[in-house]
Length: 139
Image (cartoon, rainbow, N blue to C red; front, side, top):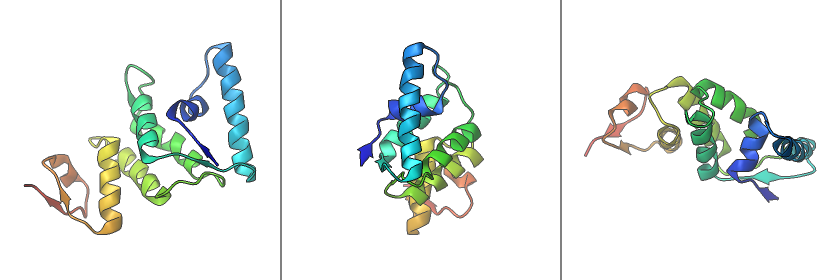
């Protein structure tokens, strides 16, 4: 099993500019092809996915809109050889992130945790009220 850092995932998701980056992109693409075939098992963490989302959304980096970020990441996470603890929760967080632009990705992930556990969310952030079905408690 291979644990992926954010820079490897980013190299797969964004177009390479330099020859060195193109070479890295080819190697990463082959790694993901092997995962599709079931020859390699890949994994990462919530924190790494959050970092990828942050970099893709950052105006100083790629400045991608939230629906595009979700559209790029979801197929990757759904690969046959991509194992992720809480994969359904992460996919749900990406859906929420794309649907509710006021939410940051970490907030969307918090909502996905709350939804899957039938918890009440304690937060001062009022933008959580925009998401239907979320029970929010403000201390």
